[in-house]
Image (cartoon, rainbow, N blue to C red; front, side, top):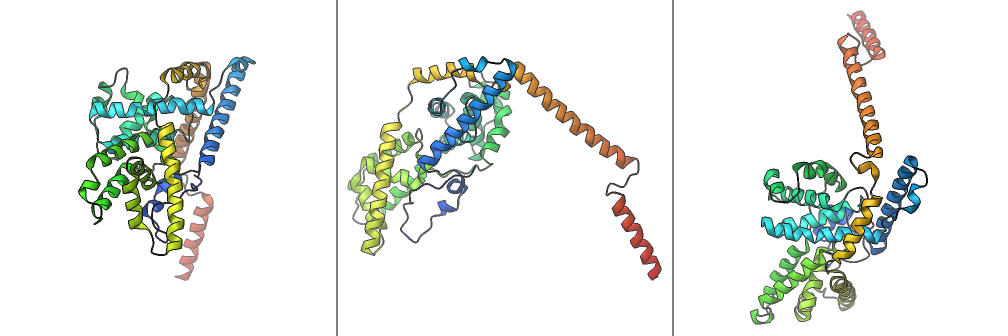
Amino acid sequence: MTAEPSETHSNSPPGKAPLYEASTQFKSWRYSPKRLRHVRQTLNAAAVAAIRKTLEADEPGSSTSVSFLQPDDELLLVKLYTTKIPQLCGHFRFPEEVEATAISYLKRFYLKNTVMDWHPKNVMLTALFLATKTTNNPISLDSYTSNIPKTSQSDVLDLEFLVAQSLNFEFAVWHAHRALWGLWLDLQSLPDVTESLRPLEVYETALKHVRVSRFTDAELIYAPSQIALAALSLVSPFLCQKWLDSKMPSDPIAAESHRQILEQTNSEIENMIMQHGQPPDVEAAREVDRRLKLCKNPEKVVGSKAYLTRRAEEERRAEEKRNKKAQDIRKTSEGEDPFGSQLAGSQESQSVDDDDDD
């Protein structure tokens, strides 16, 4: 599924293409708000249709009483488990890069999959474990799972390839907390922004806003630098303005146009952080989880009739594949030319021709 580019703009002056725009994140994981809603609605509708078909095949009429999850229900449950990643990272003392990357992985996974197929709990644990490796902060699987209650190694390993595949094996993530540090360094280089005008508390508070933004869709719509600038603006509009002034092109008309775009984007992100950055209502999320138990894809429920049927079909196909491979090996061992008789005949003809030339 290809992401539709967001209708926002980067923080770079006109004429300069940021390195970020050459990244897989920009090309594959950046959406407009409309496209993002469409992707989630489409995934949800496809899942409901597939699960309804499976239920009806097993017991006609059984799906009519099922209360399937809506896209907002799925998003609520994913958000709940997104908020658990910082807690686990604090327990393991993982650096911020691991935390931010794991959250990105979890969000991206559910732009390709649905919670009715894969529960966020184990996906979250797998995404975090994968993030420790891709950010070069590895931990042994045994140390990882033994410190998380009711978690086995298979809970993580069984989903690792699925998660990596759902990410298109695109593991690099550009983060807003790094962009914020870049903005802060820029401010330190401005001659008219003295140390007294930029107390460290401003940076630390802005960083908190960046962390809150991870619980929203901001990173799926906006560039990391845009999120960082909005976080800074929430704390110090003065410093935000100073930074903008230092980056504006010399042409007044172009500068004004660029400034208007950035101010509008800032406002959108600020509203998203303030309105949607709070943790979800836990009781509401639990209610969704209770409903999920009744509408989960039966093909994913170990021991169910649908699960056993699907496994039997997979085993049948695997057996056919093994038999075909064994047959090909047997033909080769019995002397049959693996390249086919037509090619062999052609080679023999060529050999005769070569002899005639001699």
